Length: 282
Image (cartoon, helix red, strand yellow):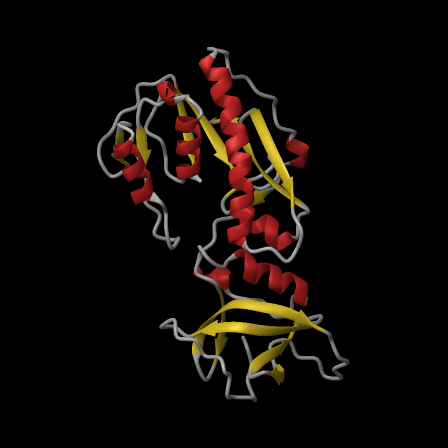
């Protein structure tokens, strides 16, 4: 997203608005695009520096994109672009939360930063409708267009020296999305199959993938699945394997059945075809 924003600003003739680019690294995703951003800056003679070095920001405004660290500045106005339609989903991983919850639209908000995260006045918003099933990678592609729309709106105003003011958020509609760690990748098989599938798709590439525990294999990652027709189960027990279709396990959910199309073990090795039958996913 940061890479797309940088390209959008530069390619649309607003390079004079860029004083410097500060690049952060994120080990939680497969590709954080830090190298691509650095290469783009070098190619286009854009001043840039690493977050890990001592840096100062002298510009009037600071634009934070996919930034999760404190910004050491007191004399600048900080604009944060957040991956939700605020005041909904303040905080962490808002797009993942929106997808797991099955929201019908996603988008981004540009806000002026305050002392608490994501509570500032909204300067601009852009949203897009979505349909399920949808993967997180596709959702990111969609909101990148929302990022571009918001950033171009900001650049137009800044290039005209307009004062950026926003609309206060409606606190009665505010919700929060908590930070996620490895524990939060674990599937709760008591959920219905539709919600479990949304979670699998929401934490896949560029994230590590949903997890479950199987005694025979240890912790596994479930990277792809699909819903199949449910059957009447007299002693329904979420997490138990009920069928195998084309050597793929079909798992009982709190409601519905889920066929797993791609599973890897702790070393990333594919474990389909799935040989065992008396299996419980925990």
